[in-house]
Amino acid sequence: MQQEKMYVNTITSCSESLLSVLNNILDFSKIEAGGMQLEHKAFNLRNCLEEVIDMFIVKAAQSGLELTFHIESNVPLYIVGDKTRLQQVLINLTGNALKFTHKGEVHIKLKLTNLNSDGVLNLRFEVHDTGIGIPQYDIKHLFKAFSQLESDHNRKYGGSGLGLIISRKLVDLMNGHLQVHSEPGIGSTFSFTIRSTLAKNSEKAINESNWTEHFGKRVLIVDDSETNRYILQAQLKNWGLETFISTSATDALSILPTIADLSLIITDAQMPGMSGLEFAQKVKTQLPAIPIVLLSSIGDTAVGEYGKVFNQVLVKPLKQQILEHYLLGLLQKRQKNIQSVSKSKLSSEFSKRYPSEILIAEDNKVNQLLVIQLFKKLGYRPDVVNDGKEALEALTRKHYHIIFMDVQMPEMDGMEATRVIRSQNSLQPVIIALTANALKGDREECLKVGMNDYLSKPINVEELLNALKMWAPRGTETGENAASNGNTNWAND
Figure (tube, helix red, strand yellow):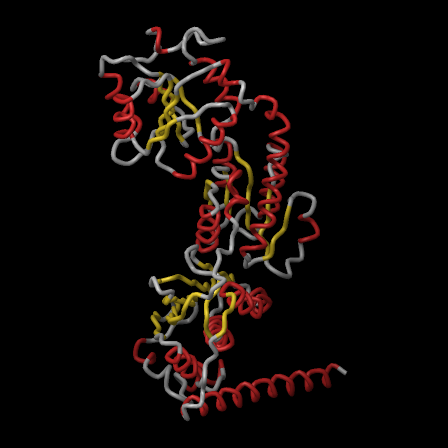
């Protein structure tokens, strides 16, 4: 029975190989005869690439390879073109990359290189692998019909030699260019460009309003793969989240105590030294309420154990919509738990009890939005500037009781702006530092240059309320430390 099964598998494999060769010959003949006509229909570009990825997930997992892809945030969702022929090129290049890669990764990247006002755009696709590579003198043979590199190479890997020549001709038909860069023993990158046009329904793939309430939340990413870290960090930053990166579970455990107000942890399953499962078990003993998401390869036999420790297990490579769906759900659930504690404290009546003219100096637009919304819930209408120079200019037009000053800003940072303000003889405002740094000595440095107080980002509601109560102008409910009565409490030594 086992022998018969082997025969059937052999016949099936040979049949599929023969069918592939025949299809390639037919495509090649049609292109050479000028009979290949491309479609011009609107299609979803992200779905197009993800369908290609789906074809190779199992093969990559079985080979122990990381298969990843990244679409830059400015790439349009819908374009007009031939989806089938574009996928044919991507399938050929991805299949080759996996075939000639024995360890490491295959990474596909898509970026927008140009977009005209009339909707004409240029896209660039890159398929990078860490495979065997190609000697420079052999690259010229890659795009010759029915040619392969060497006889031993042919026997080991097989193939007709038509895939790349067909891919190049299809790319030419899409008004693009296909090229290759390779180093033996290091890997290869096949890249190609295409010209297309925006489809009418080219709306953004992500509804950014879904993330507004989560702007600035902190996420720790733990992964030994540089490519995976880059992809996750880029996507989370695009959603307005603040990311912290760790290359190992051991390193993550050491930096965990330094990250204030952490909202979420994303960790890879298989890492050298300590696995994602072991890491999560240690984290749960210290921070049981922190949601942890595990990234696992398909076919992982330990998945059954993960449900006990992880809030969600996601299969790599990650699809943006799936990642968005589960992260939003976890962050929303955690926020509800936090809001149930602080909801009663966020009232517009607060500004009536502790009235203050407030200036916010912050260069990050996302942080500006977050802080403004928080102050509005308390009944304040703060003014906002983008750097220290603008803060100095604002003080010449209006007296502010309190300035919330970001430490790191372009043009003039918060430290320098504070020194200038304190050197002046005008009525002095209270200056409260806003900084993402939470290291020992940072608070002392801020107080030393003349700041009155120090808040870490993202802002903790309880700490903000206490600061406003502490530094409200004299004459209000608790404002006995206000700068307006000359008691600024800032250090000059």
